[in-house]
Image 1 (cartoon, rainbow, N blue to C red):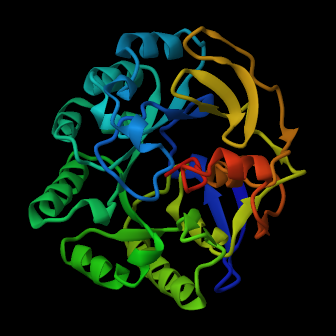
Image 2: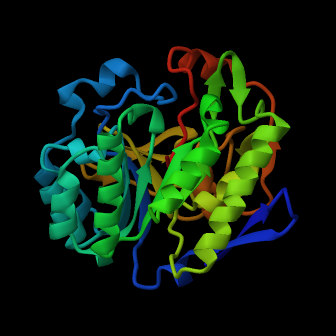
Image 3: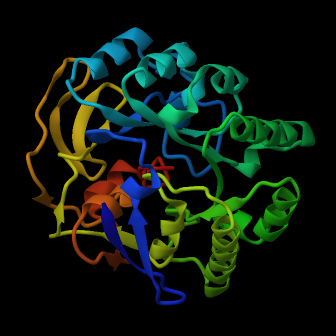
Length: 346
């Protein structure tokens, strides 16, 4: 599957993603972006999950066997991207991963703060894991011990054969410090990719309000990351951090274009609700109830803003647009107290 994903704004070169060729052993029917849980031990100021939900143990996740049976009974082979919250705080995370990877494939977003990571390295087959995306969240790692623990877990995952990449959300106060951060981790053999912040900071909407200097900083380190990875054989998965440069100037929009979300990709909420994508409220069913109906073909995108752009570039047809205008009023009200626009794939 060769997908055109636009132009790199700084150099005018086409960016292409060939997912099937980069992951030839991963054969599946559909990708799901799944909010496994909402519980998290971090207090990142840019997180869209309300703090009261991040601390409730009831949001650690649903019963592992129920989850595995629900996916198995669907009659499909899934590539399940697990996000949260912090997935590793699910009460039975290892059993959950074992059960899912017997038939399906997984990928994970994680802050690597849980010690369960070491059991994951020992017990889970890397061939059934597309990638592990490790989010640094440097504001939450305020001492050398915590930082060293993160570094050791990244190394442990790589030694165990997992495809790993590390990112740091470029929250405005962090941008000026990123050079020092990048160089420090480079001495540890770890590449940190800048991840574009999308949301509100001090009443300004980002990424639209990044300064030219801030954008140039991010583009510089994106290129350094590109050059370093070009020398390795690391492949990109279905969430490709290279794409962030395409929305440095605003939100991505595929409105009016055919998109296979709803047939080749779905969003699954914490309660099991299946939706076409993060931007579409229409419910297709519920994975836990075993009742859902997928689209048979591509449908036109109706959303002004694509809240799952990594998947949009995989499944939408046509050249994307960059939207700089304010969010629709109903979305401003919906996310007023959350401070950021939740987007899939972090």
